[in-house]
Amino acid sequence: MSKLAILSLFMGQTRNRFLQYHDPQNVADVLDMAGRTEGCEGVELRYPADFGDLRVLKDGLARNDLGIAAINFASVRNDRWLRGAWTADETADRREAIDDFKRCIDIAVDIGAPRITNCPLNDGFDFTFEIDFARAYDTAAECYAEIAAHNPDFQICIEYKISEPRMRSLLGTAGETASFCQTVGADNLGVTLDIGHAMLANENGSQAAALLTRAKRLFYVHLNDNDGRADWDLLPGSVHTWDLVEFFYTLNELGYEDWMTFDIVPKEHDPVETFATAARLSRKLEEISTRIDKQKMQSLMVQRNPARTMDYLYSLL
Image (cartoon, rainbow, N blue to C red; front, side, top):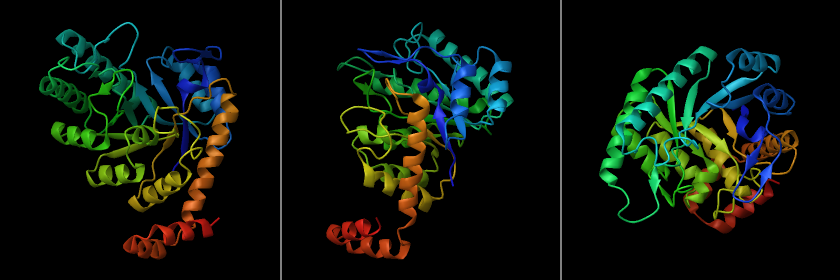
């Protein structure tokens, strides 16, 4: 069974274009909050935000008996790389981002993190004729190739998202990202499948998981939910209940047993309560998926009769 983790960012202060929620928290307090969250066994740490004092970080992890699901390398920062990190026009900007990523890899190995995930949110475009697409893919591929080569035994994950803050991201779908990874050609470069980002891109999360697994690029999973119109980062199953059941069923069929991390925004609510609920809901959805008889489901999939399939699924409740 996969372990559940919390993205540390959402234990502290968050904001959107209109509102700001909660007070800022230092990393020790964030880890203590995560340690109090029933059902969660680890964290996805932020780089560089959580790494001001490695001793404090290590002590907090040990004190709360927390594992590390991943480190989230921020390539979107307020003071640099405003036109993208991996597709920046200036070579010096790309070099700075690459070198910082390499430092992050070394730190990750030191503290026992299994992977680094990066969502290249600002590498994209807003207008027609804004960027040279071929050049953008080339420079991004060169950057990720050098990053992956820094430690070929260490997993590097690209978390795709169709848009935000750019109108369209360079890597916005499972297929685009798998193809890009294949172009780079590094075995340790794969994909973080955020189920909400798949929904936002009008994908079926189970289909995306199957595609990425067949491409040998499904490295890591984020859990949340939304209505397909925005990346709301809601509790899993709050909108797409049966989709989440199918997702857990498919991950099990594909043999995925690694971390699943909650990428959820509590807004004004108590983060500890929110993430504990997320864990309970996820385990419940996962448990429902285990009620499905595999031979029965294979037979239903051959028939492709939705009336019979849905009737069977609801009989499991």
